[in-house]
Picture (cartoon, rainbow, N blue to C red):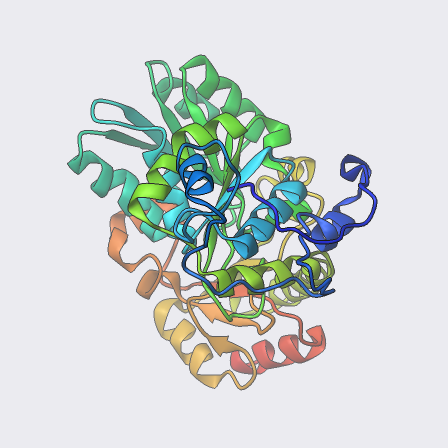
Length: 404
């Protein structure tokens, strides 16, 4: 829904000239007649009409009046418009969770008999959608090594309707060559869906590299404080309005207005937080690389990352997540986790608080040991989402937990 609320506005500005941080604070701003400075929260399920004629025009699509908060809500619209401005997209639709954003983006592109090709370096639930769920409904799913362009070329040598990948990936921070894969996908007739949750639009804008659709788990860095769930799908107006909106309207994966309000406020500080996340993560990665108990550290901004050059070509910094392997496998990982005094054990990420995850026994448990091995996830693999604490305190806690 692209409706507006009657209210005073400043003289219209050329928002296309705004820099990212200004878009994050001012994009999509709508004020009511009360002229509030903090965005209004519209906790309403329905809307009234001035006349029967206005109601009819609204349902015919001839009026931008809001109908029902399952279809659209002013607070949700502010979040959608602000994120679209930041991501450089024509349009956005918010969803209840990040996983619903991924699923509905694919659902808008696929039907029985179609084909989707995805990087196997996916979050566990995304892996399930491609490998298990969509095939139940007649959609063929094929997984390839996201970093292997020859594998992409082979998989995309026959007609394909959708391509899905994360870059950086969860949890091993694999990087996909966005421009190259998008080129191959488009030759095969496929639309590219890229999960940008790890990089955020502050570090990477996939549409500029050729992606057709961008999805976010707003639960992560966009909220940034572990308060709420949310997701978003961004792309062209034709895709969002003609293909995605009818599905969302009639099936209801809607974002709560309250959650949208939290996410609107989260976007205001996203740039500041990401800068600190990146700085802290870089220091944590350096400290881990020097620790004798650590066999390997993966962080895109480090020169020893296998795809460092590509990562830094597509991203402006390394992000807030570090992956590393312990020499002692699962026993060493569990022992270290149980010694932590500051860093939390959690399967979430993107929080102001630092959090560690053992992917093999949590987020990627259900894909099985064989597939985890193909992804490079070992029993000693740990993912740390580095928060906003003082980096020295995070490092000290990790060192003591690792027995340093």
